[in-house]
Length: 464
Image 1 (cartoon, rainbow, N blue to C red):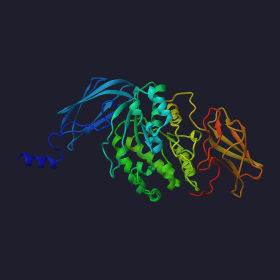
Image 2 (tube, rainbow, N blue to C red):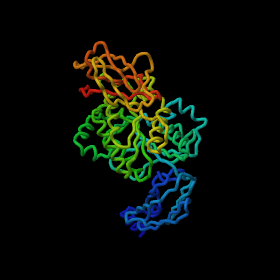
Image 3 (cartoon, rainbow, N blue to C red):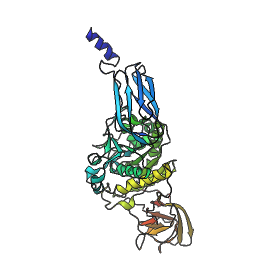
Image 4 (cartoon, rainbow, N blue to C red):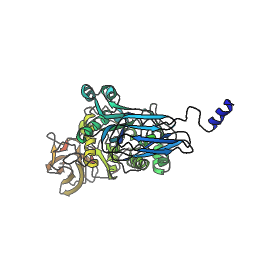
């Protein structure tokens, strides 16, 4: 009889001793819940099981009944930032989640430049270790995980920031969170979901790639390689889908190097990815990202075009781009070591745009218009309130061309937020480019210190 019962339970997908109330890994002790939100709690249970939930911030008893397929879900209204709190979930068994904080939660994703941590030998993290212990900064790091279909759970655990945990957590994400915690004075939760070498396609649901002819053809250009996935949806399914019920404030992103093989469609896949995440969370999430750094990719313009495509993505509402060309000391290293300033610049976007803090310089000066008069091109730029400055005696990576499409090194005169550009060999200017080179590093910035974003005024074909 016992054997028969076990067979029946197995056929139903339920075995004795496995019907206890269970939670996904992202719902655990030490977690940070998004403040002033309708936060979902969810998990698995015996079909029809009654579950009672009590959060210590209001001691109210809520209840929910398990569905026929053994799942449950409950929405709790969270208070303003604070804690620590306890959540008790009671069915046939009791689960107690303790040391919970309520604050701001951000997903931190991308490839290796987001994944880089103290274990990579970063000097900025080494300097942080003696003083980094911070119970109001919490980490949840998702290990590299793939799946052919969306998953409802992923490995990981919430941990307070200390010198041991920081060594293996994203450095850019840490500095982003540290700055938010300091300036907002609220707990910060950071969820790292990153995998070096990955293209944006693997972070996008498969149907959004294969269902679009342009993106499908572009995805076919990606080359299989040992060490990272390349098929559409694989990382989304294993590392993003499981956390989409978890309420967050927004996302930061550092990726693009993995898309140099199909650089000309990066804005399209990136826009599709952002749209898919916003749809999955059912929120117009703020999405702040890093433009890839100068690097010697080769003879063609792969890195240059990815950067240009990333800039185009700024046309999407509620996005922001950080330029980091001035933070690179070695263009033969695809992993710039300065992640402190990367994190702080990302935090600048969040503090200004998401949290509406005044007085923050966070936007890089950006090309706006060009006017030709005689042998000179006058260019105007946005987001240079104090004007532009030249770091050095002559501009670097600034070139000008006439109708023959031949570019020559240019001279420039700065007048406020304008550049007056010319070259002796170009009598009738048609186009100006700045830092339009894979490894080029310019030397123009706004007076407030942020580098001028790479640009070109033309739309001439370039070699991929």
